[in-house]
Amino acid sequence: GSGLVYKPKWKVGYEVGAEAEWFVSNHNSLSFGLEYRQIGCTFDYKETGSDYNFERTSELERLNMNYIALPIMYNFYIKPHLALKIGVEVSGLLSAKLHEHDYGRMADPLPGHNGYSPNDDVSKYVWHDYNVHQTIEKKNDFKRACLAIPIGISYDYKQFMMTGIVHIDLNRLYTYDKIYIPGGGMSDKHGLRNLYIGITAGYKFKL
Image (cartoon, rainbow, N blue to C red; front, top):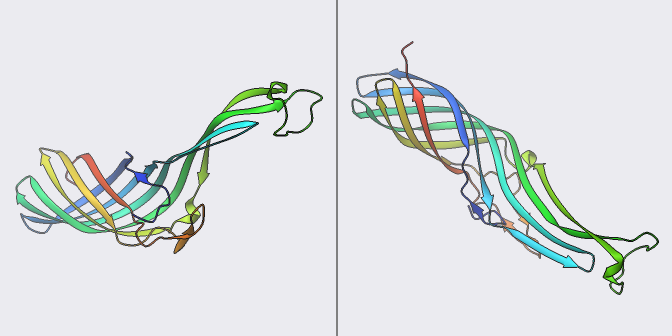
């Protein structure tokens, strides 16, 4: 959505779970699932800075959001093994971790040389590289529950099934209506929703 200050890009996550399907007729069924999934995004963001005693690059790498989801799906079998799927899903946020990467080099003064000054002779500094990865918990910045409409298709062969589903979240993610933009101004959060595609493989058996 348009709500993120820094441009998001697609990323790959994972999904595991189980589903029970109940056939109402030969062509119609309902399914009830329990799923654990990781979704999120990467960022097209890099900031560089330098002064007489440092050179720094900061990057936002990715946002990983982990959910537990309860989908209820209606399945219409247009052929014996090919079904169209639509439903409703409630999911709860378990964690949201933002991964950052800072790297560059810094200068330390030689013994007996106190403090820094733009007029100092840089030859008196000892330069060293640094490379820091950090993870920041952002769970409190997002709403804990999401309501989504999953739409997709599935195909099963013998006891194996492939499914592709597009999940469209109906509610906004952020707990705030607006967020401060570096450099001034405020950004609206009305466009910020999850949109993710799930491609899964499963094994079916009768209960």
